[in-house]
Image (cartoon, rainbow, N blue to C red; front, side, top):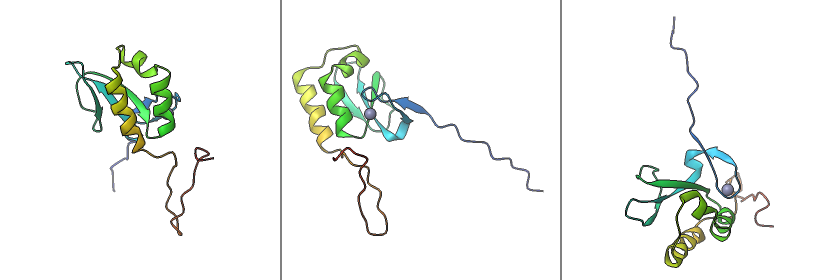
Length: 113
Ligand SMILES: [Zn+2]
């Protein structure tokens, strides 16, 4: 008897503030406003403070930063230099979903046109 029933693991989900898609927590990037008022990228999702989540897609960051969704989600103003910092971070993100296949091809989900 191998009596160890497998329980389905609970996957924490978060909603992207730009596209409103629910994704597993680790598929999103957390931005946190810390208690001292600074804005930080929180890759581990452990920092204290009010957080907001965005997909790892430039597109979502542009929407989040342009339409004041981040301000709304964090309930605070974002200084121009903080916005610039986030934009700079978003440049390191991709607009494509990379799925390395047999030929290491990159497939896009429409984001690259
Ligand atoms: Zn998104």
